[in-house]
Length: 151
Ligand code: ZN
Image (cartoon, rainbow, N blue to C red; front, side, top):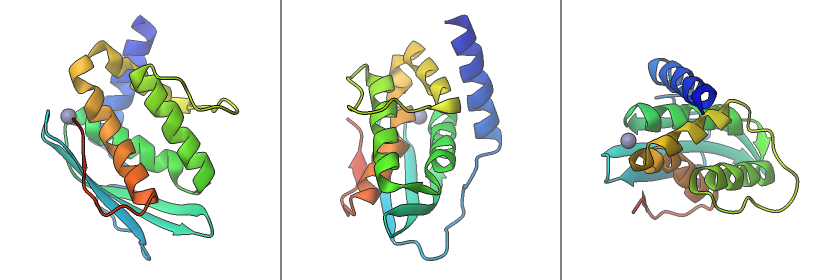
């Protein structure tokens, strides 16, 4: 757990200091969604350009705490250029990691640096901060125009 915590802190600090794909709206955005976490006040807007079943570009805007910002930053890096099925699978695995739910059936995925997010489980109040961007991503993919609010 010490290693995980150190990795978690490094990754969160790095992505919070220098968020990737932040405050940039890709050309040709055709899916977007808004998410809000009232527990912490985090707010994110996720932008996607999806063509032929591929998430060609992903970015985000908004204002959140370090964990929310870092998670959104990592998410946009992880899903950009992936096909939709891969993105949904990734969502399932990240969600399972954060909530201790069963991961989706099928092949295991290599979460790479996203595994650092598991460190948030040491701080249960912050799990919604980490999951907000991912729920907002899923809503954008689904073409839902309802705002996402974590409970
Ligand atoms: Zn937060």
